[in-house]
Image (cartoon, rainbow, N blue to C red; front, side):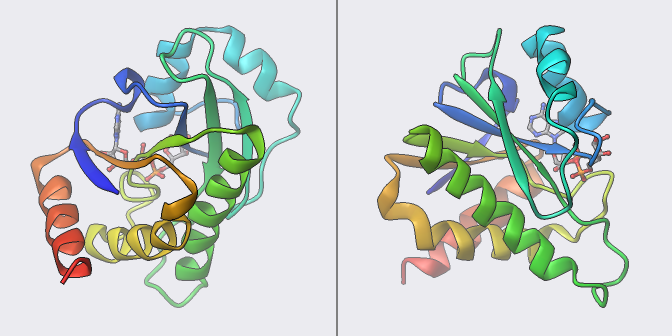
Length: 165
Ligand code: AR6
């Protein structure tokens, strides 16, 4: 497991994870960037999936992306922490990795699911990401945490350093 700083649409891995909404028909943030970079064929395949519940994940092809697959997951909207947000975010990471295994992906990159428009606190979300991914780490060649800010990158560096003590 390692953090990288940059745009998830450019990463050379088997599967990237999209922080989508339950329609799976696109949005802003990383979802918008992925749809723009993958091209319009992506939304056609997404229309056939019938949406996705928060905490679940569904796979499409990667189209114009370097990644072969896109795993679309729907994170929780942060509402203060008392509305099952933690369990839902854990489920996003777990279900995404289960889907990656199912399609045969051996390298996966995650964005900070729910930490943008959905306002999940970055520190807590990153702890959850690392703790779930640790359970699956031996089943992958590589799990990457793709960070879009220095702040998010530094949080992962610190959490992963603590983990390895
Ligand atoms: N590469 C990597 N990370 C990115 C990129 C990128 N190109 N662009 C943004 N991020 P968000 P959410 C980071 O808001 O909070 C959409 O409209 C961003 O800095 O994309 O799960 C969906 O359709 C943040 O750390 O996703 C939903 O409606 C992280 O990705 C809603 O937003 C997630 O931010 C989902 O909100």
